[in-house]
Every structure is written in structure tokens, then in C-alpha cells.
Length: 224
Ligand SMILES: C[S@@+](CC[C@H](N)C(=O)[O-])C[C@H]1O[C@@H](n2cnc3c(N)ncnc32)[C@H](O)[C@@H]1O
Image (tube, rainbow, N blue to C red; front, top):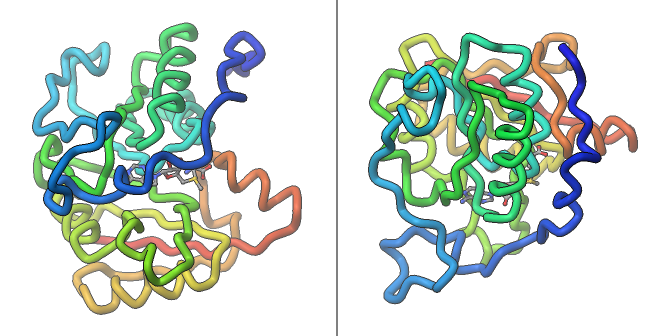
């Protein structure tokens, strides 16, 4: 596998940290949609998404700048991985790399997962990654966390029986919050990992930062 020369795609520097706070809320909680609200996609024509015309079988929710998304696609050629991301500049940038490098099994979608996963059929997904989410630490911001009971139900619905949702975060209270909700939901088998060696996936942008600064990461696998 030839590494990508990201210097050919300089746009990455301009990606904002956060978008307008209403964009993190579902359409159902907004009386007026903000102008730059990510389109609430209901269905996708997969033949326009992936070269092999097949549906996605792997999701990277909150794919950020796509470092993990692209590495995963390159090292798992038989999978179709779809990244979902609320920052349009990141999505445009990722797709410019995907097109520039002609990566057939990778695409990013400008979308807020707060609006569920209606474009994904039930029992069709082999892996969902939700890696290093925004912590939204203040109680009044909790509503903007993508991870809630509805999110868990959506993930459970779209995963194939026996398939897994993969969670990683460097924030202890985010890990506690997510674990508590998953325990309440109770349908997933929860497998806690204490060693990165048991996690056989490429690193994410945020994870590279954690490794560099020796920051602990909490990892949880949720098996349907
Ligand atoms: C801290 S970043 C981590 C990015 C990447 N997964 C990584 O590990 O480097 C969290 C990402 O989730 C995205 N995000 C937050 N809420 C979202 C939502 N409701 N729908 C889609 N993406 C969301 C943010 O824009 C941001 O890019």
C-alpha cells in the first residue's frame, strides 16, 4: 500500500473546530432549520456512492478529517466504508482525497447522525466506529452529544447479528456516560479492552495526538 501524500491536498488547515450549535440537534427539535444545517438524508443511491454499486457495510460516525476512514478503506478493500460528519469542509476535503487517490470503497457524507440512520437497512452493517467523540462537558450541552439512547438503538438496528460497535475515547466521563447508557440498553454484549494490541485497526487523528502525548484511551466493543 503506497502512503498518501497529503501535501497534495492542503485544504485540511481550514477546517473549523465546531459548527453552529443548532446543527448538533435533530431536525425534530428545531422549528427553523439553520441555513447551513446538514441535509437530513432519507435514502441513498448506493450506485452513486461506491464504485462497486454496493451499500456501505462499515460506518465511521464523526469521521473528522478522515485519517482513520481512508486508512481503513485502503487496508480493507472488500469493505465499503462510509464516514458521517457534521463539518462540511471536512467532508469536502476527504472526498477530494478519495477522488484524487481513486479510492473506490470510501466516501464521506455531510450529515448529522442526530437524525438517525434512515438510509441504512437493518442488519446490514459489519462494523460501526464511533471514535473520540466531542465531549460536550457542560450539562446544558448534553443534548448535542450524538451518543444517546436513540443513537444506540440505531446502531443496534443496522448492525448484523454478531457484528460490533467500536467505541474509543480519551475522556473518562464520556466513557462512563456511554457505558451507563449501554448498560441500560442491555442488548449489546460489552467487551472492555485494556490493551491497544487487541484493537486491530488504524489510528485516528485524535488517537495519534493521544499516543504522542501519552494520554490513556478507553476502548469498548459492543457486540450485537
Ligand atoms: C473529536 S472529533 C474526532 C474525529 C475522529 N473520529 C478522530 O478520532 O480523529 C469528533 C468528530 O465528530 C463530529 N461530530 C460531532 N457530532 C456529530 C454529529 N451529530 N454527526 C456527525 N458528526 C458529528 C465532529 O464534527 C468531529 O469531527
